[in-house]
Image (cartoon, rainbow, N blue to C red; front, side):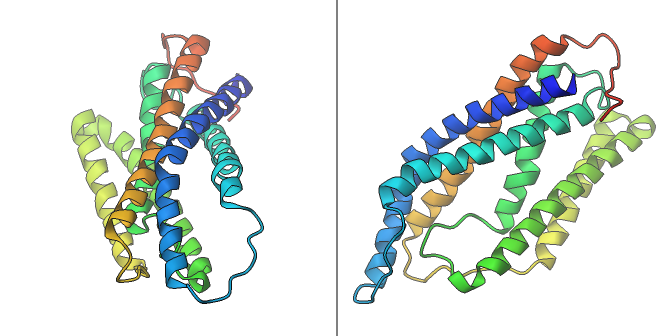
Length: 243
């Protein structure tokens, strides 16, 4: 059963990645072109190395392959997480659980880290700090996921004592407070040049967020529809003991 669910996750991720690529190619790529134009204007008169790939290759094949690989990986991760939580978070339908899980993963894997370390277009960040920025971003992602899992665990343990509504509010509040503390403790990175066009930075971050939303929304819908036919409506508590 788990293999069939993971296969549906891979399929959902692949379909979602196509939609995400179309969105990114339509909205994100023109903004990247503006950022590169700014960078080239700033470096006018300096020698440049020869590009290994043209902009056309980067914008189409490069972006397409990257989004596909990311989408399939997220689909697989989503399916594994689904196997873990199915039957353990109440008597939810497979489709509803898919939507809730996708929302939680979108929040913890992207939105929360994005609030602390938002995506930036070319010409905004320094090459020499890429290692530091990557490590800090990955740390924020890991901490966000761990804290969300802890909040879910807290909510489940408080449900019997305080009821589902109160337990959910307490768990959500605990998660928000914990995330806020983490954001305060982690260093802030601000390398944006003072004369960089604000509208370009805003559009890039907005459309980057939109690309992720499209990806996770379609994973939720496609996976939920396919797994609903596989599992049917829950008539009893089911668990995957092999996961």
